[in-house]
Image (cartoon, rainbow, N blue to C red; front, top):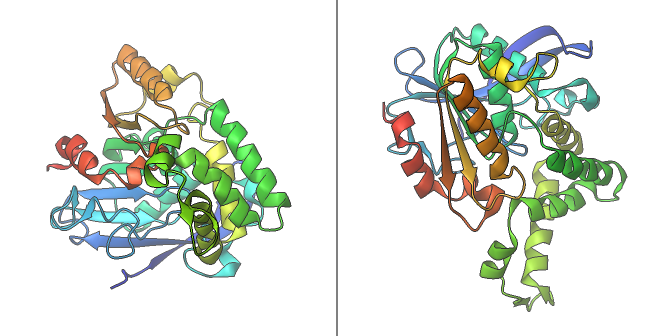
Length: 324
């Protein structure tokens, strides 16, 4: 059964570029009722949404009854990034995507929590883009969360990802099949050469007469066209380009000193998108300024998408955080 999509009206929100608009912030609640149990907030990745559990939940491997984020122990809230298209209302898509930064989204999420009376969270957890927004929330609202948990993510977008996202933007703005073609290119960064070899080994799709590696990629291109909107992809790609908790604030050590949450970074050893060395450097700086943190590693052939696949490892690596 599909979870209920709730709505919060955010009036006259002004982005950092000066753009002002009203927003219909959508979210889902699962698990125990609010205010009777610790609350976990999940911040979704680029093509994700607020549906984190159940048959269609993109993180159902770790969210649900008896799982890592146990819905019999926790209240779980997940917001949709405004403009992600999950509500299927074209009027809520955002065309002026350059008017939005992850900090704006973090502020909107903070207003959403305030509107439903949530002043304290057990944790904010997010992969990839969702992790970048979670980092922003830890600085904007230092008393909000006890734990900050980020997976395949960092407090800033690396030059490598900036270059990747420029290429994505060019495809999205110029291709005759922008969603399809951008997704083909992105999937090569989300997975690894080894995972392709293990899965396909140069095998042929006899029905289509092409390599299975090709048919798999084309399938992902077709699927994104079916379930996503061009405006949403452009916005999410732009947000991913601009993760940076230090912008306008000072250097990282100075900014990170304000974070009160215990920080857990989870890297994937084969990630060629958010490469682990960036997180290793982050952990070293956090240690130097005395901010509580841990760095944990998923070992996987799947690269960046390991946070969507290696659920057994995630259950083990994060059990100390969520064994409340």
